[in-house]
Length: 124
Image (cartoon, rainbow, N blue to C red; front, top):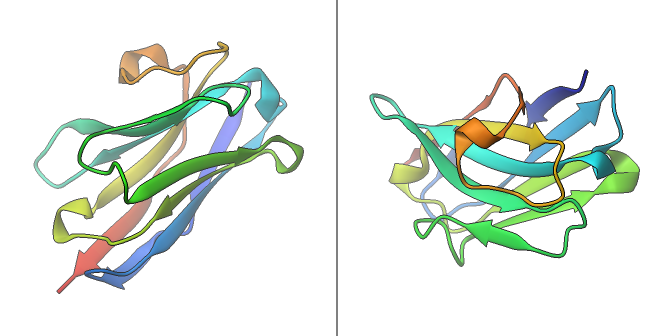
């Protein structure tokens, strides 16, 4: 069984940056493709970014493309989400997710394991 723990959330002003981390334990990270999702108040869960098992392929939601970067360090069993040029609409709880497949997916139902989430609040 794999456990995911997110960290790095917080309060930031519009235009600022944050880096989220997702620590993986219980299994080696290299077995999983990974993704970040978010849930804003009164909204459903939304795909943010994903990375395949090798780290060679990434994909992003249109709303974050060019501002967010997903990466992974298999040696550290950690996945990152670098968020730049943050906007008010990026305020949400951010979740990392894992699936034991070579390729990632933008659908939440494709992921087997989830973290507890970390709050990101962007203020003006």
